[in-house]
Length: 114
Length: 114
Image 1 (cartoon, rainbow over the protein chains, first blue to last red):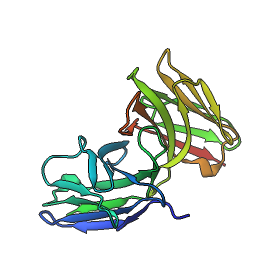
Image 2 (cartoon, one colour):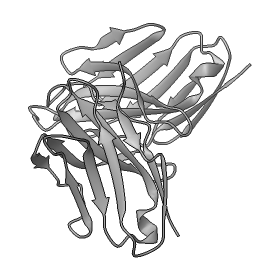
Image 3 (cartoon, helix red, strand yellow):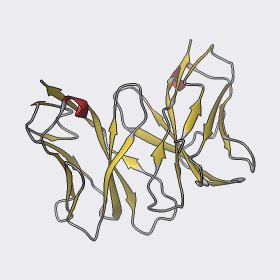
């Protein structure tokens, strides 16, 4: 059974460029969460999606950040006009249901903004 | 050895000793607690969870204790091995939440010496 898959694992962008991060949930999971982790800190919730729906985006900056989970294909976290402060590890997790269902994490995408 | 997760972010133990990693939470509405292990360069890995209607739960070599009176959670690892070296995070969700958003603690770095 494949776990949560994320790509790319490492992404380097210059200031002002766009970053696209992809997440494929575990088989049978229809709930996807995105978290951001700064060095030596815990993970911070960004957004929670189900297929074709954003359920909770309260942790995601209003500007420049967007997320989607289309009917077909992976979930995408998109960061427009990246700035140095966006450099972080971005983790995706998936669960079978919502609420207290266990979330399983992918290996993360490490974004570096030059 | 013991640590208080938020105040002592590092814990060093000898191989074969038992480890205790502590976590304090502040929200009395927290209902579900999870311990994750994160190795360098990897995503968080689920270890064990506990619901607020329980005080103790055991897994293979790990035990989680929950003290709701003082809002304290601990992870005990028996016969610690070098492979247990990682950062350990406690995470929680709020009672009645259907959103599944996890709130992570800062983490404790566990180092196991041979």
